[in-house]
Image 1 (cartoon, chains in turn yellow, purple):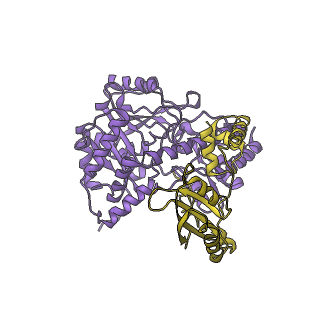
Image 2 (tube, one colour):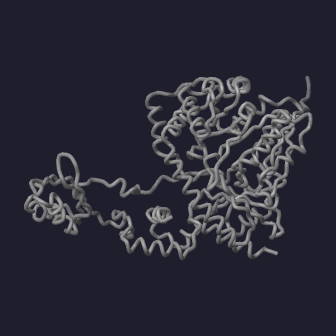
Image 3 (cartoon, one colour):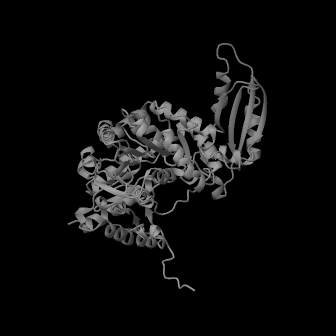
Length: 160
Length: 391
């Protein structure tokens, strides 16, 4: 039941409790209660909007940064990861297997700003052994959504 | 020199009744900004992995005819699917035929089994091509009324009452277009008994088999003693959002498939190759994407049904396909009048139930395979319209 609700909200956070109730066959009160509970328990972390900033002429610069770090006694990678993810510029931070350890997604207004963050904030952190910065050239798809719109299905107006 | 006095078109073509709602279609085509609940197909594009498989096959040059029966790999996958889904064993080399949609399968079946004057019993209302395919094959459609009170399920007793010396087959299609009805297994079993008793063929159109909500679909061929006397028609259009690919299949005994294959090879050759490749991919790994779509239809189904309830249009809860079939009798209009007026005044398109047979009169078919926002807006408009004309 909660999973049904979450699935609907994940796809469209603006679906109202009443609409969800109609879709799932539960009462609106029940749905509201479950959503409140999920919010409280942080099952629902936040409601956000996927924005295509280019449409308002506001180009964002994004970068993926590979970070190699030396794990520390007792805390492993976590302490350094925390120092990094506390920066608001770091939009997403992942620990990965493979040739480097952390993948940090950074967003900024200009390339200069992003480069500044890497060279002045991220790279100097003790334990960071090296970084490789990949600037994003184009965003095709964001969090499951194709930017520039999904293809339209062209159906005949009536089909028996 | 002879003067041509005969009709240019054949009597066979002339006897087909033109779609009764042609005028409505023309009207609809001339209008803009219409919300359509009249579309009998999914609103999803075919899942990408299926499209991608077909694109790859084109790149590799799979552009030739296939075996008349269809690609061996597709028939094998289909045999596996029917085994896994229903426990049915069909021999991929002699008991399965890949067709151009269920439409072709239905036409082939009728042409392969009907002699002039043979009767085929079918429920009213039913999908528009059922009686035309029977007529085209030289047979006589015999309609068995169904109604809202019985959830538009056709009763075995009513079928048996229509059996004559000329009866050749029973043609059913559940989950049903236009009503959304699903027949429970025990009621289908009673139809099977009638078929068995009178040695009738049962043609079961199960194109909506995967689109059932909270109930189980019964494949007619799984009923006792029915496999040999059932022609199972199925396809990929609805479950995998593949309407435009035109791929369906017939599963039946060897003798029937052999007869149908003869007709198929002379009229069609083979179903489109690109579509067959896509169908293989659908069967191999389309289960998840199909289930996701079915879950989504179910959410919209509940939404539609609740909305109709609020408007005060009596309906029975549809458990399959993607249609609701509410009664509009309270307005005193015929379903055609209702549909036309609704279109003109509120710009919402529905299909008059009368298009599907006499027993569909007084009902409209509302398809909920459209976006939630559109369903919501359509319900507001229909509600306003009904409130205005309700007597």
